[in-house]
Amino acid sequence: MIATESLSKRFPRVTALDRLSVDVGPGVTGLVGANGAGKSTLIKILLGLSPATEGRAEVLGLDVATKGGAIRERVGYMPEHDCLPPDVSATEFVVHMARMSGLPPTAARERTADTLRHVGLYEERYRPIGGYSTGMKQRVKLAQALVHDPELVFLDEPTNGLDPVGRDEMLGLIRRIHTDFGISVLVTSHLLGELERTCDHVVIIDGGKLLRSSSTTDFTQTTTTLAIEVTDTDDHPDGTRAVRDALHARGVEVLDGSGGLPGAGHILLLTAQGDETYDLVRDVVADLGLGLVRMEQRRHHISEVFTDSDQGSEQSTEAQRKEAVGHGS
Ligand SMILES: Nc1ncnc2c1ncn2[C@@H]1O[C@H](COP(=O)(O)OP(=O)(O)OP(=O)(O)O)[C@@H](O)[C@H]1O
Image (cartoon, rainbow, N blue to C red; front, side, top):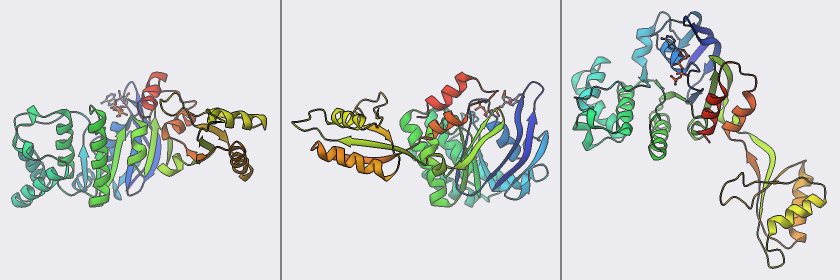
């Protein structure tokens, strides 16, 4: 779907993209990076709206340097910033955008109605956009990106400004763009965690450089960390502690798995050394007469991986990194 080769974009004072080479296939792909990482710059180059300083890129097999018009016919774009006219309704605006994309009047009206229904705008679609909430405006921007039935859409920070419920709804909509319509998606975010559930593939950039590109499952691959939860009994009113002490006595280091989270204080974490560790836990729990509620391999969260792999980055500030990691988990 997208291929870049040593793509660079230099502004007088800043290098926004620095020899970025990445391939993006079909499906939902997250493009993640802190503010200023170069996400919007990359999208503008891929749409043929801004020339690269060096390197090359193709979208749907078309060269961005020479085929911008053809790319924009087949690709939808939801820009990051508010760009909606306040005095017209969602219906009028989206019909207009459909007509701009070349749809005849009747098809434009039909596609607009379908698309606005898909993004969840119903009666409100006849009211002026100026009175819409942020979430409704984001939906209008999404609708205009989809109305001409593109093969691929670029969504630039679609969850910006949304509360947690609005963000979840938007992420659900994004997922369905692919599952219901087969349209591939490139979605940017500075919130790493939210892409874990939504994307098949994640590309992380930092200071215009590629940090990592891999499937979401590779990011969150199972670790050798075991999470254990046990019941309490009259003999052992604190079963968790009894197991921890018993394992400790056998030379196994055990960590408190609560991570400071309320309600998660009864999870123990330990590093599995092979099948023996499973057997040992089973025997210890049985010897104490406790019930084993759970013993499972723990999965990484993307944000943990990012923290690990982001060592040595020169250009992003610690504050940006914390923002990108912290908000997402
Ligand atoms: N037209 C421009 N002129 C000068 N510098 C620019 C221009 N556009 C972007 N930049 C700079 O390039 C860098 C990358 O910006 P870009 O907007 O691509 O980042 P981003 O990852 O999309 O972040 P954000 O989400 O904050 O927009 C930033 O340092 C930005 O200030």
